[in-house]
Image 1 (tube, rainbow, N blue to C red):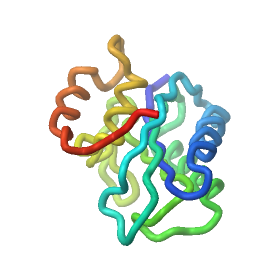
Image 2: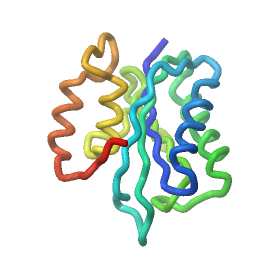
Image 3: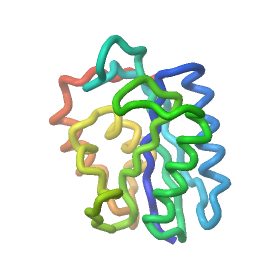
Image 4: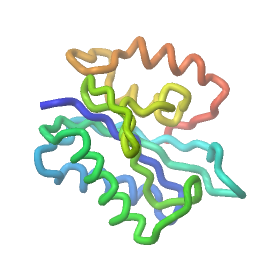
Length: 162
């Protein structure tokens, strides 16, 4: 089994409900076991056009036997199931599922980049991720001290724990 980490966000409709629904659906994926879910956080939208509602964010930890590409396809299907309608990039959405880490995999291709190339710059990813990693990271692919260091560089980003 490999540890995989997913960042979840929503700022359209019943955001908290959408995030809980996404976690339940992740738990049902074949070859995957949901092992941790972070607290919920609220953040202002970043890099989004126009005026948008605040985002609710969380992170989940899975143990999976799925290959990275297969899990990525499962995440896209999950987004479509909850989103219902296609949305333009960086617009309000019921669910945004960002594939953050898959074990020690380093993947760079047209459809998938792991680890997520921007996660170290986003408090709304790092803080929920630190919840699921905890202080005793054991054999997980990311360590608490790495998260603390990245978070210190994001001090100017406001994030509220719910």
